[in-house]
Length: 87
Image (cartoon, rainbow, N blue to C red; front, side, top):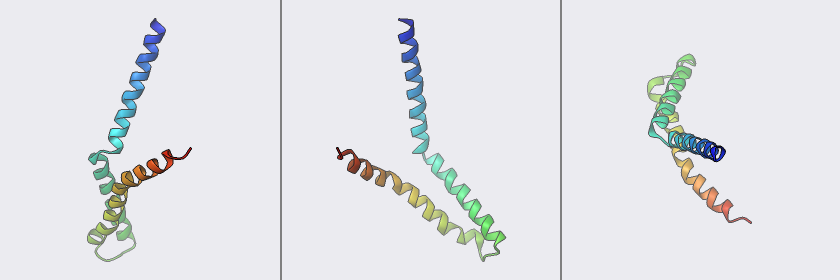
């Protein structure tokens, strides 16, 4: 019985890790960090490229990126529904 308990414990630990990974993938913390890192990267690029108003002009591409990542769960749901119907 010890082997079965070890295997069950291993599966429960793996499931917990998968649940935490999924929670991280959908968390607002992750989205905010990605948005901030994207904004900083674009500002730095605009500064190096000597483009006008880098702090303001970097908002648009950052917002576009964040909106595109926020729409992915919707499209993922559509994709799953469509592909789950296939034989």
